[in-house]
Length: 419
Image (cartoon, rainbow, N blue to C red; front, side, top):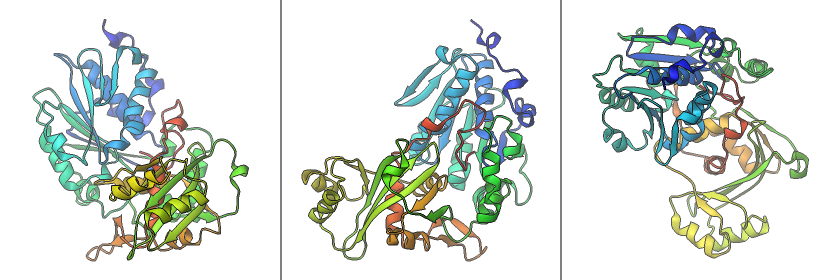
């Protein structure tokens, strides 16, 4: 069966601005701009069509992000959704471990994280590469991927999608500073280019022009900007009780270990992915805590039977806490890129901090980006100070999936920011 005869991909499926990019000949295709502009959706659509059109056994398409664990709820889920929209999901074979999607005709999507470069080097026969959130990668990561793409099949391409977070990021220097390199095609879009967004999405972005101009510049206008000094500006102080929040909020807890020169930090959150809101309910912040002390705090806060994601660098303490009754303490994922990926997830939410969480508030007010001495730009890396509760929040948020908030339109749910 030639599935191309059965695919529904008339003009009504695409945003108009992307339609000319369905058939491009350039090696590098760069899609950047604001949140909710449909960049990742279009690239998923384009690559599905390209894969189905392939003759002679199909194409092998490598899909990457910096951190492998972030792929499942992002571009992997997007490809499956678009296959469903095209009416061919039932003809495809999707696997989670290892993550892949096989299409009729022999084409296959392979998903890998750049946090394990050796796994990338072991993959051969790649015909196309898709890079989601390209600003999370390093220039060296991109160079390695570019070297891997040496297919003899027609039109091998690399597609990159990202929000233009900072001129200090490698993508600005590579693709924009001195003009685009040869064999490159670039498209900038914003939420105004996406006719499939739900009502109110754009207005929510535009309201940030007063409260967070730097955020508005990048995620509403899709312009390259400089990071402001503080990592989090999406927060406010507010009193609340868990009973007031309703059933859409789930308890999430994170635990960062310290001892004499550092703090043991516990963050207790109530999170609603659909509303993109984090309610910071409780904290603990102390030095010199042994495993028994931590277990006692968890007992007093009635958290012994809750899942708590903890600093995985000290598995000994996690094991001791389990023996002391906190059997659902689990190690948080760590590795290259995990800090930035965790920050990016938390930035997509509005934080409401209960006023009793004074240490959490103090860290929010001082948690800052590193500043590059030569350029004066803030780098996409936080200063490793005043970050114990910030780390605990990131760990807790690993248990939050955007999949439940996804919508059936050519956007990425209603989350902000998004590629």
